[in-house]
Image 1: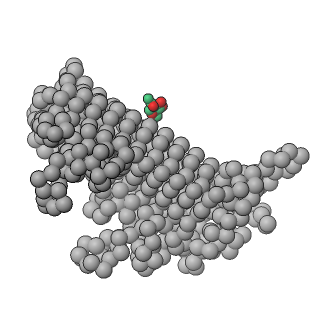
Image 2: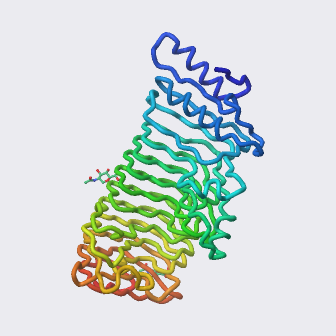
Image 3: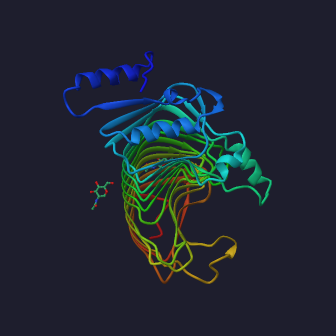
Length: 396
Ligand SMILES: *[C@@H]1O[C@H](CO)[C@@H](O)[C@H](O)[C@H]1NC(C)=O
Ligand SMILES: *[C@@H]1O[C@H](CO)[C@@H](O)[C@H](O)[C@H]1NC(C)=O
């Protein structure tokens, strides 16, 4: 393997390897340039990235893949385990750009897809530029022939994942998906897409345990963070969201048999001009799912349409659920220190059903206003209590 002499991490890693030459552990360095990647943005480098991954994955001990500054044209890629290496650090300082033809990514479910891996970190100051606007325009022209689009960064059935730094720009569909994973730590990420871009959720988590999402800024066209069935022990802290649809547990009850959502903390968030703030949303359909043990703490709402909302009766256009009620049981949900402005008169809305009341709902120190006056609250089939100052007056 060739190391390029002018690349700083390469030198550091070489020194590390030499210092440790007597021991069995070492970090082996792989630079995508040495696998033929072209950093000028015009030549397809997909194969070089895959070769660098295969080399790293096939090496015992710790490995390091470096993507230096520059622009790299890369199509859909699956990075698959199991790997021989116990740890793979991918440092991206360049910009990864999608092919101009949106169909290349769009026909694939994912752009960068990590599957069955363990101990993978993706770090750096680099950017994923998925070039989404051409696909969004296709969707806006109402053409049934548009592909649904690719998730920019997807992790499936993987453990011990770190994502640090990095920017996701203009994803075709979701920016980041964490599906079937354990021990995921995401920090300092920037997510950017237009406020009217379709289905561009920032971060989607489902069927996953022990996930942390910290210090991340999300401007996008759909949910900033969406939380699906089977999410357990999720910690979200210091998020700025907007434009976007807020932080949402759900939509749940898509399926009759569904895993529950439990132990979710959302702390220190700022929502600016979003459609929703803190939302729990379920289709009006039968399901054995549930939501319990959710703490929404210390949020600022700036001109948010629905700052606090539980919607158990989601059934747009009355299609696929007429006359049905949600089977999702919602219990033990706390809203504490939530303040700011609503852009609609109803700032707190709890819309549940008489077959499955929402229970254990607690409001504490909530102060939401509408046009400098007290806003209103709406309650249907909900049981709980209000503690200390709660404005608008709680209807619990
Ligand atoms: C809830 O999740 C947090 C991490 O988000 C974890 O530290 C805590 O132990 C979990 N609580 C329970 C009861 O599992
Ligand atoms: C509630 O918020 C409004 C607007 O920000 C503020 O003027 C008012 O003092 C707050 N009320 C309390 C009791 O904190």
